[in-house]
Length: 99
Image (cartoon, rainbow, N blue to C red; front, top):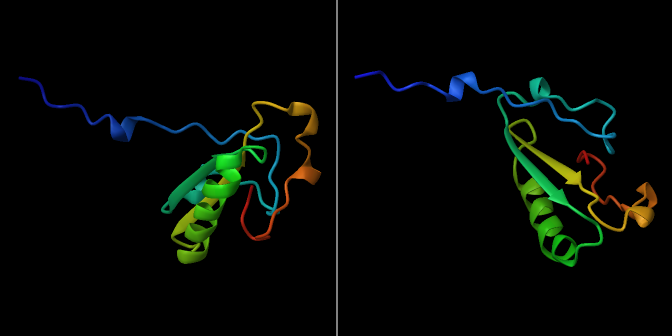
């Protein structure tokens, strides 16, 4: 009988690829997040469910947990309405949270 393979230790996550970051002067890398729990919240500003439910829930998590232990990252995705999705549309109320 063969030993079970430890696949978790052999899988590497790909580096985060973005057009850019808002609300941070540093590029966010996997190395900078090592040792933290990571909440990656994907949303779109024209999505009613995102604006009414998802963003407020994410904001609560951001406010509740120690940023040295939990990283909350908002990932604004554009999958429709590309022409109107500009930086001026995204109003950020928490200047320390990276998007």
